[in-house]
Image 1: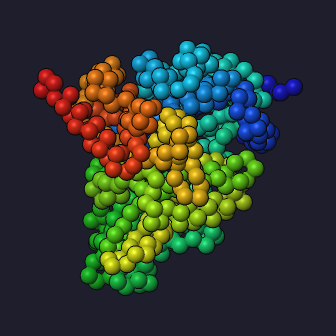
Image 2: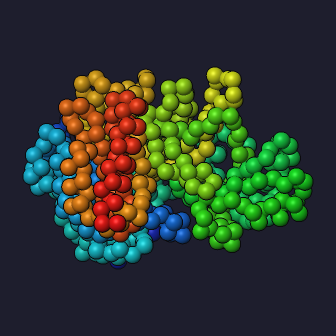
Length: 510
């Protein structure tokens, strides 16, 4: 007999901790039952809340619509006995939902729809979705009502914090994510400590800094250790997408007064950031200083992994990240898979890092960002680990899209993904396809444009374009795209064709 979940009013800190620990083993039980049989009944509760620092989240236009990225998890409804409860801050447009259902090959859309419970907080305020749910006891009851059998259910979130832990306990189902007590391992400071423990190369630097004075002294010490260093990077511990990174350029004379003066010219990743606001956040969340790695050729690859409930570290994917912004530090998109010259190398290094996290008790999907550098005339790439993201990230949903549309799987030996027909798959993805000309486009308009111009994914050719963030299009002129093809060259052609068509179609009436 499964105990009834507590109400918010009954949940003190001690009971919450005890209930959360009691639920943990059930995740392994659900995991094992699903793994043994493809059509095992279970319920996925999806709460795609970006429970991140709010001052950092405000830099992200249309942040609440980023919840729609996890609609690719509807892939789980391919199991005809699976059910799903999906919660959002604002309603999902019916056409957006229909768009995903028609991509779910092999399952009638009506059957999949009947097994989906779509709930909404009807709250567009710039706060995390989990916070909104916890304020609404009746919404929690509706989520509970959508769970057929709590013993075969689990909660999936974008990232885990004490808020997601509380929601897990109130729903009476285990959290499919990292224990919030371990979240420090995924900060910039925590990442550096894990890299050292794993024996993985990392940039020279200092962590666990809290004040501007500590940043100044760390920059001076870094220059003392590396006299030829021209630049360093200052990073906020809990920032994301590179938007909490800032570039520091060393003055000709490296003493404390000149470094203090040069810090006034810190180059922030986001134009709206100021030194005053940046160091206010730095004192609140902490951060690091590390060397800026130079090289004639530089790329920013990443690896996705999962630690399952039994502690096994499973490679998921590799990507080359596309960066931009004023300092070239902001995540704009990704290419799958990472370049062949270092693809297996970064996967091997990431597995060492995953082993450390598994020993610490992490059960989660997570990513590791690297920097790969190569000098002119050399064939050898030097790989350094930069940070761990103990959450879903910008490379998670494009890979889910690939799984969703093809039903294929990764070959861990090569790092390539193969469709059931044996074709290797490639993609380019972004959350940042943005233009003022796109503003005012309704979901109906986008569906019409992609239908008339043949931008749909074709199961015959196993190539085409998938869209996400459709809800953000009208207000923000912002759209997410994943172009999938059978070669890198085909992907680039599809991506460029998509941009050309959207620009041409949105020139209407202007």
